[in-house]
Amino acid sequence: MSALEFQLDCDAMGHWTYVSSQGVRHEQVTPVRSFPVAAPQEGVALVSVDGHELLWIAHINLLSPHLRENVLRALTQREFMPRILKLRSVSGWIAPCTWEIDTDRGSTSLLLQGEEDIRRLSATALLVTDGHGVQFLIRDLDQMDRPSRRMLDRFL
Image (cartoon, rainbow, N blue to C red):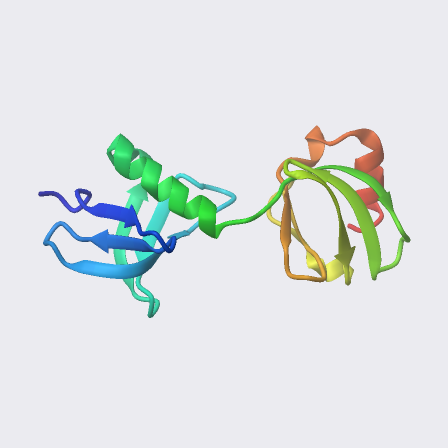
């Protein structure tokens, strides 16, 4: 049995159980992506409840379809990072201010506490953390409409 032959199942409580290729069982494991924005399909670790890495998955595509589905489902449960598609309005040009936005999960507002809560990940990607700790992703500034980019430019 190879290292990538293992079991990952969800119990009735929503906790994930990992059984290694040697048959060792670990309760309440958590999948963690190494590079969730830059390389979401690469570098996933299954981590024990006490924070120790149990298994390293170099690439999701190395898994069987059933395991890949379970790992992706577990990751989706853990991760919540809506993508900002459009800025509709901002309450002011100095933080703190409220942004009215459209995301891939619907319309909402976020509280920007300070300009330092906008972090550049690459030339075109930004990570915006609101006052409640929720992180929003702007994957590609060039894909946003012109009014949204103009508003963003005032904060960058």
